[in-house]
Image (cartoon, each protein chain N blue to C red):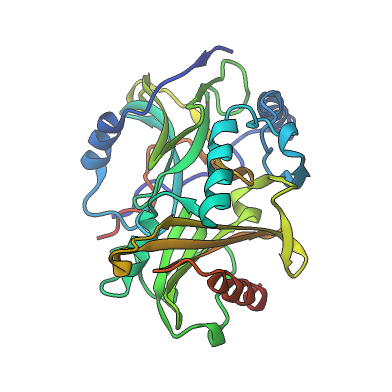
Length: 136
Length: 231
């Protein structure tokens, strides 16, 4: 297993969102949201975001080339930083149209001076930015 | 428009042995960094034993210094400003409770603590049967507030708490409080402080945030009452 680290690439994130989104967001405005996406126009990712406030977050995204076993899996670890959007993003890794079939599991951490929180584990084998996110 | 639903559960054709192998692999990975583990419950630790202790030493010292000097952490709170705005016009993702699909029973704020409910919004992620978290926005006699619920039975969350900062003020459950924001002594109407009460149990991680124009610990006391009654 090797480990890769990528910084936040907001611009690259927004392009695929715009391509697949028919309207405006129905989430991430009034509450913190978290997701993973896999085999998505080349990228795999796990993201935590909240429009109204930066928080200290760390996202670890584990990418499994074979969803059934850990063989060949690797991690993208953002490290801790204070931001409105923390993305563990790996471009040009996974293309559904060439038969890639990654499983992505995201571990979404938050730091406060009172503790370390694992807020959520997200999991995806597809590119969908789920039903409920974009519904206008 | 409906897009691919998320697969939060089992992987097709994965055997139990393979699933266990993956869980072990992930636990070893996260354990190396001493991070909270999925479904790992609530752990109380001395701050110096926490994995992030050294990395955040400066940030923690700065917060402690602010609290000593002002009573609260002095930094802008955009959540406070956002909450204030909700009284005038609710955000696009705010809707009625009946329009929301939650993957859990949403524990609402008890009615006697409310003047008016503004609405509900999603948080967390959307899994097969709904959102793993949610927000209730409401107005009290003292200001605008939000309750954010993380249903850890479906989000698989966990927490390691600094035992020196943890109380048990909400019905004996681990509780953390915080006040942050900026006061404007020349124009108090522009002051924006955010009061936060977070509490944790085996089903939910919950957070109530309320905005106010002034620093007054009575606001926090009222929020603690609200949390106790809604727990």
